[in-house]
Image 1: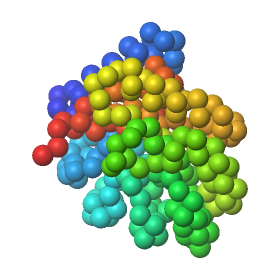
Image 2 (image 1 turned 45 degrees about the horizontal axis):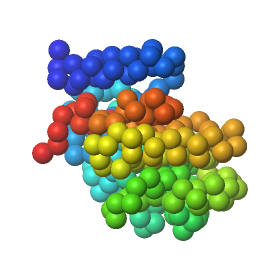
Image 3 (image 1 turned 90 degrees about the vertical axis):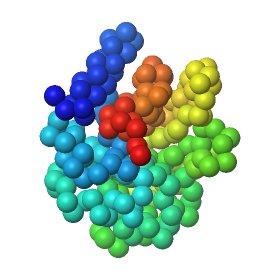
Image 4 (image 1 turned 180 degrees about the vertical axis):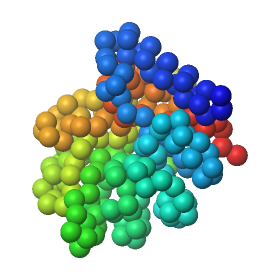
Length: 224
């Protein structure tokens, strides 16, 4: 058994254990394999294990990988997106997790309209005070969601957030709870995905309602 396959089995067991404990169907949880910094050969190995959803953070890295990998991969863009890169990612990524400002929303709408397509998106909400974190402030989230929902070439499918980088489980849980409460205030058609939980905190995220996990290290190992 390969390392990735062993890691995937271990992850699935942990996900099933949490779901069993809280009365959720494990099949309702989607796993996005975060392939930032992961070479193509390792992504192919994960694909061979049955994974089909992969997340990339940088267009410059993704553009080298996408042509070399199977066409049925569902690509997710999960990193900070500059407006000048929008023209490259719209239509190439199944879901953009990172809409956090009106200017970005407008550019995605413009490019999607020009391409004659509808781009599925999530709104990224800022859940911590760390200076490096992107995201719309929680108190501005519903207004942005309303604006996104009015764009004819965008399909708002939910929210994404990253918990504070801390070992304090109560702070992580409160951040995820905040995101879940915002998610529940969205109109029902926009409540498809609640994207929260990474390698170090996905079990808490599941307990707080996540149905889309972004897992890198626990699957591929530590990046060099």
